[in-house]
Length: 235
Image (cartoon, one colour):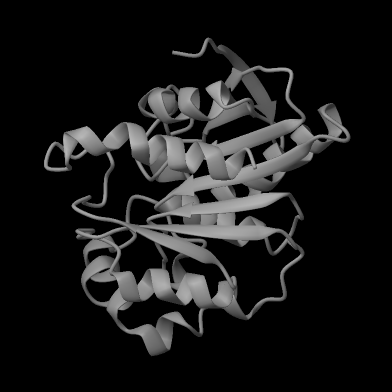
C-alpha cells in the first residue's frame, strides 16, 4: 500500500481535504470519488496508480468525508468549481508536470465537465454518471437520483443534448471510458454517449456492478482491473 499524507486544497474562501501520494514521477493523477464516497475508499486504486509511478491526489469535495460543509448546502456547480480550483492548484504548484484526471460516477461527471474549462493530459471516466442540466444548481440532497437513474439516463436523445456534450472543450488529451457490464445505475447507452462525445477509448469490465466495492463483483478480477487503469493513467 502506497503511503500518503492528508493535505488541504484552497477553493473560494475555504479548503477541501485531499490525500496526496507522492512519487518522483512527472505524472499527477487527480482522483474524484463518486457521490457520497470518500477518499478513504479510494486507497487501493490510488495506491495501484501510485505504485506505477504517478503522484496521486484524491479529493474529498465539500459535503464528503470529514468536510465541515453540510452536504445539503452543496450543489454540483459548487463541486465543479472545487474540481477546477484543484486543477488550478496542481498546475500552479507543479509546473511542467502532466496532470490527468480520473473520476468515478458523479466524480466522472465532474471530471468530464471540468474538461470544458481546463486542459490537462488524460481523462479517465469510470462508470460516468450524468445529471439533468437543471440540477447543476440544485441542492445535492434533493436531486431526484431515482428518476435520473431510471428514466433520464435511458433517454439517450435527451442525454446527448446535455450542455456538457455541446460545449466546446478546452481539454485536448485522450479519454478512456470504463464501463461495468452489470452497472445498475449508469446504462451502457449513457457511457456510449460519453465515448462518442469525447472520441474516447473504452473497455467493458465483465461481471462488475456500478460500484467497484460491490461484493457481487468477481473478487479475483480486482487486481487486474486496478492495474489496467493504473497503466493507462501512467502511459
